[in-house]
Length: 202
Image 1 (tube, one colour):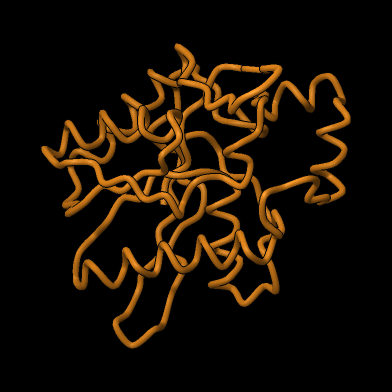
Image 2 (cartoon, helix red, strand yellow):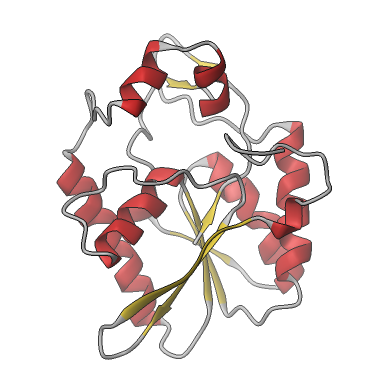
């Protein structure tokens, strides 16, 4: 599972913000593609949101694979009229940052449990469709939290950690149902680039 690269800030009066990648995000996605080019990956799935699709595109291009869009791994705020990178919220101590710290769900289209069920069901469907294969799933921080929390046996999709931009989170999935988390927050491909990584590094 891969978190998208850094998008632009977008705040609208109405409609979904659905921002594209920033200039730094485009570079991040390129380094991600270079990093994964040496691996055997059999399929690339992505959230329907632009920041995920644009992150997945260079990966799929390098691997000569098509992209499959999976609606069920869209972020919980997909219909929000605003998207502000979390680093900007933290820097200004924005009330939305305080809500995140307090783990408040806010006014969403679905409950936290419904979101976690949607994410888990979708990812498990991808797993079932590709026995014995390695799949790249490009999605969002909330989606990665929801799935990994469920694998760990957590009761809901609470944000127990922060996935960095283009971070890789590897999960081994056995046909018998066992799931093992292999790595969390791989960002070696951004080391030394000077590009932002996330809340805790550059």
